[in-house]
Length: 317
Ligand SMILES: *Cc1c(COP(=O)(O)O)cnc(C)c1O
Image (tube, rainbow, N blue to C red):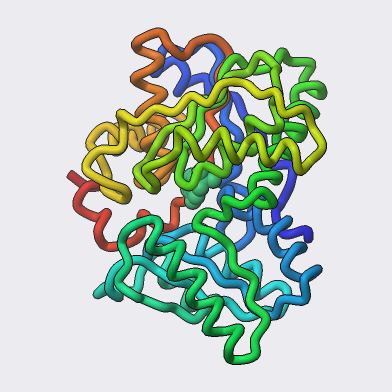
C-alpha cells in the first residue's frame, strides 16, 4: 500500500554537525513521511496494511502509550482503507485529550484504557482486544507495539535501499554510522537486515519502551533478513541504554538541550520521547569520539507528542 511520501529527503545538517563536532552530519527526514503528520511508522504500515488486507481483515488493532505515534499512524492507515481501528493504550485514561491522543479521536479510532503499564501487558491487551473483536464476528489484524513484526521491520530494510539510491545520485560515500531511536526496536532491526555486512554501523538509542532490546533487535533483524531472502549474516547490534532518563516518555534535560540545538541550528524539530534522546546520545558519543565520520541521524518523527500538556514544563524551563 502506498501511504508514505517516499523517498523522504536526505539532508546535510552542517550547522548542527559543527555544534556537535561531527564533520559530516546528515539527517534522513522520516519525520516527513506524510501520513497523518508522519513518522517512521508510516513505512511499516505500508506493508502491515497490505498484509492485513491480503488476510481479509476489517479492523486493525494495536497499542502503546497514550501518546503513541504508532497508534496514531495505524489509525490513519486504517482510515485510508476503510477499516476499523482499535487501540489498547497504557495506563488510565489521561485527563487531557491532547497530542497524538487528540489525533486518534479525530481519526476515528476506538480507544481502550485497560490500565496496563508494562510493555508485555500492553502486548497482551492488544491480543485480548483482537480476541474480543473476533468473538464478536469481526476480522481483526493485530499489530504488536511499534509495528515490530517481521513485516513491519522489513520496511526499514527497504529504506536502506532508498538511502543507497540517494547516495548514488549524490555520488556520495556510504555512512560510517546511522543513529536512530529504539522503541520496539523494529526500525533498528530492519536497518540491520537491510545493511547486511556493509561497513555502516547502527547505533540504536534505547528510550525505555521495552527491557529486552539487546536480544529482541538481533533476533528480529535475523528473521527480517530471512523473510526478505537476504543474507542473514548481519552487523553487530549496538544499543545505547544510557540516555533513557527516569523512564519512557520522561523528557530528560539532555534531550531538551538536544531539541534546542537542532531547532536553533537547523530549524529542525525533534520530539521529546524518541528523537531528542537519540540526538542526546549522538551528542555524547560525538564528544567521546565513539561516533565519528560520516553520520546519518535517522529522524523518526514524533512531534505531535510534544503538544501533550505534560511536555509544556520541560520544554519551557
Ligand atoms: C516508534 C518510534 C520510534 C522507534 O521505532 P521502533 O521501530 O519502535 O524502535 C522512534 N521515533 C518515533 C518518533 C517513534 O514514534
